[in-house]
Image 1 (spheres, rainbow, N blue to C red):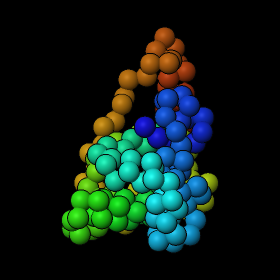
Image 2: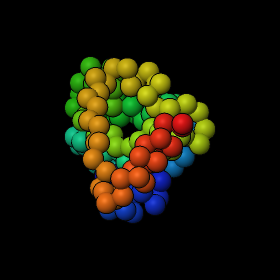
Image 3: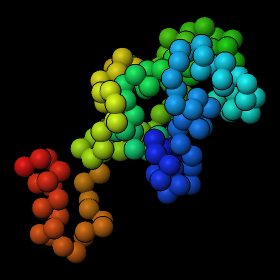
Length: 152
């Protein structure tokens, strides 16, 4: 379980996506980042064996980094499984569970990850949660939140 922010990662009992991947800020090329990962044997092994990746607050993940992580995972999985076809699959064919509200938090830099090349090929199934839990006893406040959420 990962999240794009430290606070969110603490709340879900996980770690930041950047830390989990072992890429720091993720700057540099795909090869640079893979070399960084390979220097951390435990991280490399975890990523190569990974089957499901959960990313919370995905709305804050920009398109460039989303694509970069997808390519990194493709390379790691293809090498580990000795299957070059995995390089062409988004995220090396692992299952992604992406959690977040694109109306709440935008990436600090760049464009939303749903505008990335990888997103198009994922075949994402969207599950929309519609029941408000936190404000369940205040209908007026619920309505106000819905209006503000859509920028009205």
